[in-house]
Length: 285
Image 1 (cartoon, rainbow, N blue to C red):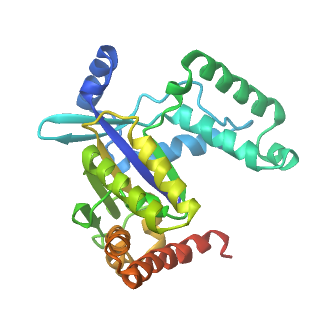
Image 2: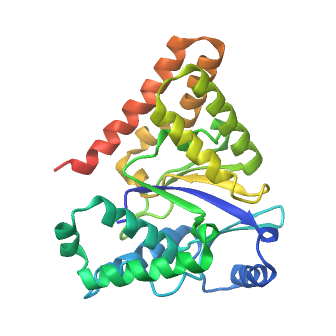
């Protein structure tokens, strides 16, 4: 079973990479044995599970992943590197910061944890803050409200199961939005302007600000993707078909902008209640 996580990804065109990386990714795209889109999430998750189930567990791989998610649009290749080592380091740092030391030791021995932290510190000293940029953001058990802002309802792509029996998690079921970086930045800037003017929710403002700043770090001709990932397995077909969170967030922003406060409140409340009910499943027995 895939983890109940959603992903916000940026795919950069080959032109965004240094010449050596550009040649490497071009060759990777032609490789017959690379993970294909349908099984990439399962392959990425499998790598992590094997590391964490080892004795002792390995919080981060010793080398950066050579894999990436790929998209091709009008003969232009777009690349979203997995960055498994960097993302593992960042996740492990958050885990240590949020977990009492004695409890953390039950998951990862102190010596392994310290070695992982030392390796990450050396990496940061060599590469600086630019080396910490990730093309993939992950959210477990829900999709943050600010992640809907960069997209439009017409960019929605829903695929449901075809009814054929399979072993393990299905690979066809998914809900994805894809847009251009130009559209994503413009919508984020508009949302930030509206929310700052009409809403006093600092949490919502800071969330949209963080996404907007993150998008500015990438090539202007990139693609931005919201992938519901394993969260689709928490939702039945009717629930997925009825999920129009992007359209509802957009309607809420338009309502604020035009003074239709009741419409804005109704749309925003619908999104919040939908995702709160899904997020509560994390603590369900």
